[in-house]
Length: 302
Image (cartoon, rainbow, N blue to C red; front, top):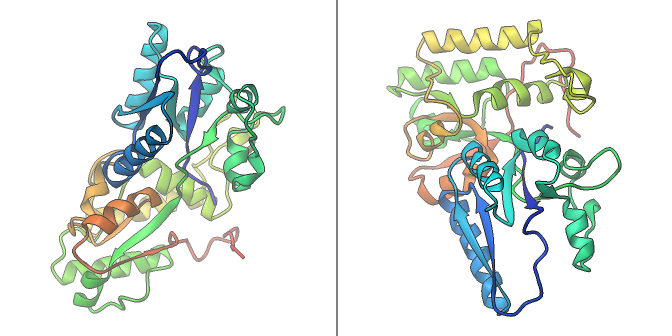
């Protein structure tokens, strides 16, 4: 299963603190909003309360692209944060930014702290490990694509609220019943290219890109123009024409549509769960992403 990842990158200019004379401030820029943002603030607060030498200042810098862009600009002006949270799309940019970041393994070693990359799920640690075996970033907020559905809406539409659609044809059938029952947004998704192309490819064990999905070289080419991918996008387009799939915006803009009850089915990040748990006023459930049942290369998870 492909995992959507964010990690913490230590910027070289500030990653090793000078001898402590007074309390040292450590700027930490992140993109965690909502329930996750509250958790990040509590994490920093607990650390600050545990000792007197350092103070972590956790600052929300907007979306993932916005925080990375802001950090790049800050580095160029000589005012970079000590720690930056970067999403997986920015990993290559960080790896190519020689002199701007310092591998987390080096930071830990210089600090005399034990750091064991094997403590992480291998798919996560492997993503942030260079060919020489050195881990570059510390995995922090790793999530995967999952399927959310409104159990109350399912029940009202005559669907089994205890059974999530497991295939895309079942999603379309459920969406049709939801629409017939009066639901104006039966299904939507956030992070379209991630959920409906990259994760879709992983679930079906087919390439998203050449060169081992981009890990084998910078001359990688996208490869999601196969008959399987084309058919999936065509099916989504047909659902859209019928009002079964409703486009709600780019990136994570559609996230709010599920916990609010506006959309009954949703594919997005597992990271949304905190917001769903805190804000949904209806019964809901989480399930694996649907698959295409006729795909011969369909991945079967033990």
